[in-house]
Image (cartoon, rainbow, N blue to C red; front, side, top):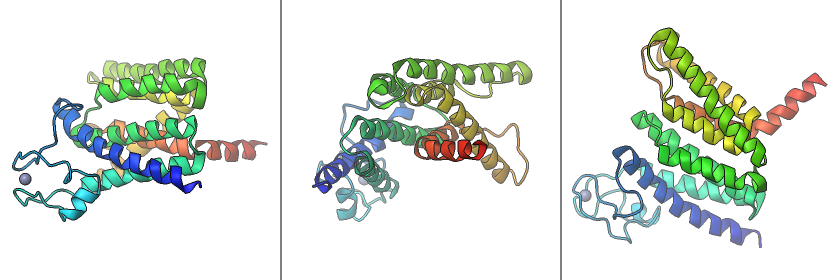
Length: 254
Ligand SMILES: [Zn+2]
């Protein structure tokens, strides 16, 4: 019986994964995301609805545009599949509950933000503002409670804003952007102030490790880093593993 809601969630997740592709493509280009049919990026022909079916369309076309035969990146079906798996796993673990919905919305937005920031070095406010609203709306049902969520939003966003301003005063250039401030506000709204601090620390750690690997052991201060991608990864880590790590850590102290 449990399989029916899990499969249904997986199908909805596939469609939302397909919408994630639309967001990833259109938001950085400041195009309309709700209206307008998808077009082939090569020949601009409108994609028929049956070719645009999540996963199935790409598989039937064997990864090529029906009109111009140019290759369609496997990134599209992979993102669709990720959406489907994410929704199915959320419902499998938490059932059809507000907790499953909150985890899905949070991880979905983090995923889209991580990809867009990685590719374009921007974090669209559309996503973070939607995340803040969702985080506050869900706080009483499946989050840290409304008071904690509001505090988390202010502390999360505020701390990054302060860090960024401090860096600007020291170095004369902005360290992190307004997008990072908004992202941490969204993270705080979903997780509360304490976990937001953990996310900021994990994001900074992941970003530093990446910069060290990329720089061959040295951090090049001038090389730009998609910090939002690392914050998003840190937030996903804290959501998935946070309570387990916390239990382990307090166990050590006891
Ligand atoms: Zn084409």
